[in-house]
Length: 179
Image 1 (cartoon, rainbow, N blue to C red):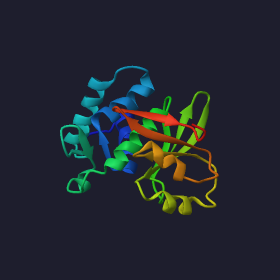
Image 2 (image 1 turned 90 degrees about the vertical axis):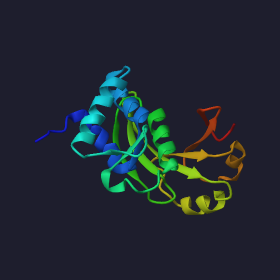
Image 3 (image 1 turned 90 degrees about the horizontal axis):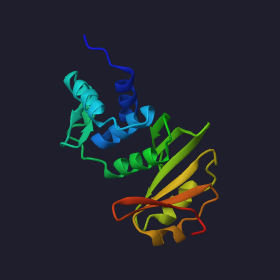
Protein backbone atom coordinates (compact mmCIF):
# COMPACT_ATOMS: atom_id res chain seq x y z
CA UNK A 1 0.00 0.00 0.00
CA UNK A 2 1.37 3.39 -0.99
CA UNK A 3 0.78 6.49 1.08
CA UNK A 4 0.52 9.87 -0.60
CA UNK A 5 2.91 12.41 0.92
CA UNK A 6 1.67 15.88 1.95
CA UNK A 7 3.35 17.43 -1.12
CA UNK A 8 1.76 14.84 -3.41
CA UNK A 9 -1.60 15.48 -1.73
CA UNK A 10 -1.16 19.20 -2.36
CA UNK A 11 -0.49 18.59 -6.07
CA UNK A 12 -3.53 16.27 -6.27
CA UNK A 13 -5.77 18.83 -4.53
CA UNK A 14 -4.94 21.38 -7.24
CA UNK A 15 -5.21 18.76 -10.01
CA UNK A 16 -8.66 17.71 -8.78
CA UNK A 17 -9.85 21.28 -9.42
CA UNK A 18 -7.95 22.06 -12.63
CA UNK A 19 -8.17 18.54 -14.14
CA UNK A 20 -4.95 19.18 -16.07
CA UNK A 21 -1.50 20.50 -15.22
CA UNK A 22 1.95 20.88 -16.73
CA UNK A 23 5.05 19.42 -15.08
CA UNK A 24 6.48 22.93 -14.74
CA UNK A 25 3.32 24.15 -13.00
CA UNK A 26 3.59 21.38 -10.43
CA UNK A 27 7.25 22.28 -9.86
CA UNK A 28 6.33 25.97 -9.39
CA UNK A 29 3.58 24.98 -6.97
CA UNK A 30 5.99 22.98 -4.79
CA UNK A 31 8.81 25.51 -5.28
CA UNK A 32 6.67 28.26 -3.76
CA UNK A 33 6.31 26.19 -0.60
CA UNK A 34 10.04 25.69 -0.13
CA UNK A 35 11.46 28.76 -1.84
CA UNK A 36 13.63 27.13 -4.46
CA UNK A 37 13.96 25.02 -7.56
CA UNK A 38 12.01 21.86 -6.82
CA UNK A 39 11.81 20.44 -10.34
CA UNK A 40 13.71 17.20 -9.68
CA UNK A 41 11.88 16.56 -6.40
CA UNK A 42 8.51 17.30 -8.03
CA UNK A 43 9.27 14.94 -10.91
CA UNK A 44 9.83 12.19 -8.33
CA UNK A 45 6.51 13.03 -6.66
CA UNK A 46 4.72 12.89 -10.02
CA UNK A 47 6.38 9.60 -10.97
CA UNK A 48 5.17 8.03 -7.73
CA UNK A 49 1.66 9.39 -8.26
CA UNK A 50 1.67 7.89 -11.75
CA UNK A 51 2.90 4.57 -10.37
CA UNK A 52 -0.01 4.39 -7.92
CA UNK A 53 -2.41 5.48 -10.69
CA UNK A 54 -3.39 8.83 -9.19
CA UNK A 55 -2.45 10.65 -12.40
CA UNK A 56 -1.51 9.92 -15.99
CA UNK A 57 0.52 11.81 -18.56
CA UNK A 58 -1.26 13.02 -21.70
CA UNK A 59 2.04 14.27 -23.20
CA UNK A 60 5.59 14.47 -21.86
CA UNK A 61 4.70 17.79 -20.24
CA UNK A 62 0.96 17.58 -19.43
CA UNK A 63 -0.72 15.26 -16.94
CA UNK A 64 -4.30 14.70 -15.83
CA UNK A 65 -6.48 12.48 -13.71
CA UNK A 66 -6.68 8.92 -15.07
CA UNK A 67 -10.41 9.16 -15.84
CA UNK A 68 -9.76 12.19 -18.06
CA UNK A 69 -6.97 10.68 -20.15
CA UNK A 70 -9.05 10.73 -23.34
CA UNK A 71 -10.48 14.23 -22.79
CA UNK A 72 -8.90 17.05 -24.81
CA UNK A 73 -6.34 19.24 -23.02
CA UNK A 74 -8.03 22.39 -21.67
CA UNK A 75 -5.52 25.05 -22.74
CA UNK A 76 -7.61 27.78 -21.08
CA UNK A 77 -7.33 25.95 -17.75
CA UNK A 78 -3.57 25.62 -18.19
CA UNK A 79 -3.40 29.39 -18.77
CA UNK A 80 -5.63 30.04 -15.74
CA UNK A 81 -3.31 27.84 -13.64
CA UNK A 82 -0.35 29.93 -14.83
CA UNK A 83 -2.15 33.07 -13.60
CA UNK A 84 -2.85 31.35 -10.27
CA UNK A 85 0.84 30.55 -9.88
CA UNK A 86 1.87 34.08 -10.88
CA UNK A 87 -0.37 35.53 -8.17
CA UNK A 88 0.44 33.10 -5.36
CA UNK A 89 3.33 33.98 -3.06
CA UNK A 90 3.48 30.75 -1.11
CA UNK A 91 0.45 28.44 -0.96
CA UNK A 92 -2.83 28.06 -2.78
CA UNK A 93 -5.30 27.63 0.07
CA UNK A 94 -8.33 26.61 -1.99
CA UNK A 95 -9.13 26.28 -5.67
CA UNK A 96 -12.17 25.45 -7.76
CA UNK A 97 -13.21 25.51 -11.40
CA UNK A 98 -16.17 27.64 -12.48
CA UNK A 99 -18.97 28.50 -12.36
CA UNK A 100 -19.23 30.42 -15.64
CA UNK A 101 -17.87 32.89 -16.51
CA UNK A 102 -15.07 31.98 -14.08
CA UNK A 103 -12.50 29.49 -15.32
CA UNK A 104 -10.67 29.15 -12.01
CA UNK A 105 -11.25 30.65 -8.56
CA UNK A 106 -8.67 30.47 -5.79
CA UNK A 107 -7.54 31.79 -2.44
CA UNK A 108 -3.83 32.27 -2.00
CA UNK A 109 -1.38 33.56 0.55
CA UNK A 110 -0.33 37.11 -0.28
CA UNK A 111 2.39 38.33 2.05
CA UNK A 112 0.88 38.24 5.55
CA UNK A 113 -2.68 37.95 4.24
CA UNK A 114 -4.99 35.99 2.00
CA UNK A 115 -6.58 37.16 -1.25
CA UNK A 116 -9.25 35.68 -3.45
CA UNK A 117 -8.98 35.73 -7.23
CA UNK A 118 -11.15 34.60 -10.12
CA UNK A 119 -9.67 34.01 -13.58
CA UNK A 120 -11.97 34.67 -16.53
CA UNK A 121 -10.81 33.68 -20.01
CA UNK A 122 -12.08 36.13 -22.62
CA UNK A 123 -12.22 35.01 -26.24
CA UNK A 124 -12.53 37.80 -28.83
CA UNK A 125 -16.23 38.59 -29.31
CA UNK A 126 -17.33 37.22 -25.91
CA UNK A 127 -16.72 40.43 -23.94
CA UNK A 128 -20.40 41.50 -23.83
CA UNK A 129 -21.58 38.05 -22.72
CA UNK A 130 -19.01 37.99 -19.92
CA UNK A 131 -19.92 41.51 -18.83
CA UNK A 132 -23.58 40.42 -18.64
CA UNK A 133 -22.71 37.31 -16.61
CA UNK A 134 -20.76 39.42 -14.11
CA UNK A 135 -23.53 41.94 -13.52
CA UNK A 136 -24.31 41.93 -9.80
CA UNK A 137 -21.55 39.44 -8.95
CA UNK A 138 -20.23 39.82 -5.38
CA UNK A 139 -16.86 41.57 -5.17
CA UNK A 140 -15.34 39.15 -2.67
CA UNK A 141 -12.53 38.38 -5.11
CA UNK A 142 -10.32 40.15 -7.63
CA UNK A 143 -11.18 39.27 -11.23
CA UNK A 144 -8.32 38.57 -13.61
CA UNK A 145 -9.46 38.82 -17.23
CA UNK A 146 -7.25 36.60 -19.36
CA UNK A 147 -7.31 38.29 -22.77
CA UNK A 148 -6.07 37.12 -26.15
CA UNK A 149 -5.57 40.71 -27.32
CA UNK A 150 -4.84 43.81 -25.28
CA UNK A 151 -7.52 45.81 -27.14
CA UNK A 152 -10.23 43.59 -25.62
CA UNK A 153 -9.86 45.39 -22.28
CA UNK A 154 -11.89 48.37 -23.52
CA UNK A 155 -14.93 46.11 -24.02
CA UNK A 156 -14.95 44.71 -20.48
CA UNK A 157 -17.30 46.61 -18.16
CA UNK A 158 -17.53 45.59 -14.51
CA UNK A 159 -17.62 47.08 -11.04
CA UNK A 160 -15.53 44.20 -9.67
CA UNK A 161 -11.96 44.94 -8.65
CA UNK A 162 -10.00 43.58 -11.59
CA UNK A 163 -6.86 43.34 -13.69
CA UNK A 164 -6.15 42.20 -17.22
CA UNK A 165 -3.59 39.60 -18.26
CA UNK A 166 -2.24 39.27 -21.80
CA UNK A 167 0.36 36.86 -23.14
CA UNK A 168 3.17 38.95 -24.66
CA UNK A 169 6.32 37.40 -26.13
CA UNK A 170 5.87 34.21 -24.08
CA UNK A 171 5.31 36.06 -20.76
CA UNK A 172 2.06 37.08 -19.16
CA UNK A 173 1.74 40.82 -18.57
CA UNK A 174 -0.74 42.26 -16.05
CA UNK A 175 -2.49 45.61 -16.43
CA UNK A 176 -4.83 47.63 -14.27
CA UNK A 177 -7.98 49.22 -15.68
CA UNK A 178 -6.39 52.65 -16.18
CA UNK A 179 -3.59 51.53 -18.50
